Length: 439
Image (tube, rainbow, N blue to C red):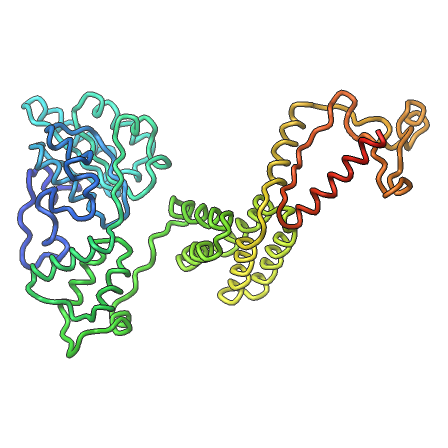
């Protein structure tokens, strides 16, 4: 089997300068850590990487961040800044044989006094067993592991590997960082983007924090000939719009549904609508979002506005009838209704407390007076004896005891003084007073 990485400069201290025909993103790759844009919290004098480089000692680390934020460049420059042998592999293309070779080479070089920085791109794509294979070499210091991932390491990496590594978070590039990338590209090429100021801003916004994507778009724009500067509409017609980064089964999915839930709970319909739009525009399954909104209606609104649950279920029927995109308006209506409804988690808290009590009390029998007695034997032993039929009582309320004899009455449900639930709270207070009076 041929080495998958024959074409890579595996043992390089610095990459050769790219040629004039190399992609713009490669020609603009930073040549020192201080040229990395947008990650000063890591590479600056007070950052984790800045401190390690100043001390001349690296520890194993996981670089976690969105695409196009400089993870690969940072790893390469770390090796150069510390004088370490740099070896790069990709979890997409490599397997156990490649790892064994990399570790064997690292051990051989360590014997000659040369430490190895092993950069593993897309490290989350290695399975758990393969990740375990790193542990002895990291522990012995055979390699300093620098892994790069776009996925949450808490979900994708072994706890044992995480315990031996620092997790450093790279930020998506902000507007200022992306604008500086464009300025560097213009200085390098000696050309100016043929864009109006509004179009330039639209180009930056379209990158969604991804520097590599932005530079690819810039390279396209610098290669065309136009008679006048493009406005935002003309720019959109020329370039394909980048879809938002969103993995429906990974962290982006959970982050946005959490943000939607919290915005509705915080009674911010504008923010709630924004996160709803983020999910649906990115291709999330509309019924998944609606299921979460329906759960919210019970968990965070409950009896403060019982119509919230009705609105959600009606939205489900409307979406099933209309489909996308027309039916998505019904989901929007349910979202806005829930965000603007009075809030109460009393029903949710009551469920938790009641479930806990049910598990703790086992199989206590209800009091005999509220049990049906369909047979003579059951009547003879007292089933149904003394039952007070509430409709025959004053106010339609008997005040009878319904709890097992071995258990004190509990107060699981505590309605709040908001919305419709305030009326329920008042009704319950009246019943409690009557219960005390009638004993």
